[in-house]
Length: 279
Image (cartoon, rainbow, N blue to C red):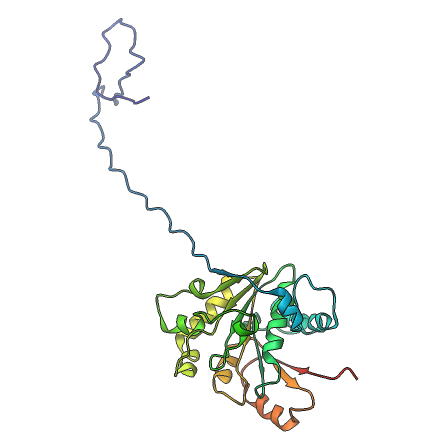
């Protein structure tokens, strides 16, 4: 009920007016009514952006040798369990020394064709099977992107578009997959100055955001080969961990040494021998 101020007082001896009481100050005079402030309009919060959802052909991926969540236990799955464990140890700060940006992991190689994209996709798949880890797989081989093609998906805006278009946010170009803990960030539209874009302050801010936005997220970058591009060296300088894929029987010690020399500031570098024969 409203409290009406300034109503006439009851006469002496008359019953009090309980429905419309008078509010008086110490002097006995009825106070002036206080002005009622205008209502402040409340703007509803904008709905959170949702990334585009894509569906992966898991049967096709399994036939190509890639890991899938429902696949039975296999030799390749066990190998990637071994590969990811020291990487996760650093991500969770349980290694011998703390590694800055340990959740930013780039997979690269000395030369094209050594299997880095195969390793990137399978590593991301294996990490997504962890109970307490979400994964973002980034196609950072901006000159020759291949992650979407391997996954059977069409080209889509991505990393380079975010770096060149201020109005774009990560959520605008990220792709949510039907694998619960796996998201994708495509390379985006080709740009002639991709090296400069990857070395820019915008890229630095973007990586800071990616590394800190979600505490449980690991970001796997499928990077360019170290000796075939300049972009990979720029990317490596931003990473906490680098996996260098080495093709057995093809990559020489000299080539690998030259490639490792290009990684100057990354604290953790793990060589991974790929395409070994069963014998």
